Length: 119
Image (cartoon, rainbow, N blue to C red):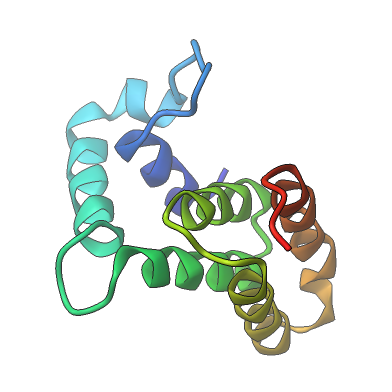
């Protein structure tokens, strides 16, 4: 997992996850700070609505090729009311910015959108 994914899990533990991340376990003080910064950057408040922050996270996840990160940000964007078209456009930007090597990562978003019945 990337540091961004760990921060995401530190900020919002995975549903049904009984196992805590080893980085959080071994460096809880630092990860608490990372979690606070994550919440500040991606949460409500500020000029950019949280939905668009999560869509940005999806874009960045494609660029850095992190499927776990992408699933997290897409699910959060869905929870915040993102449409399929908004998510697809965010993914397209990531693919264009990061190159075709991001295609396998990008593909991880579609089952989530299908499961949420986004049209």
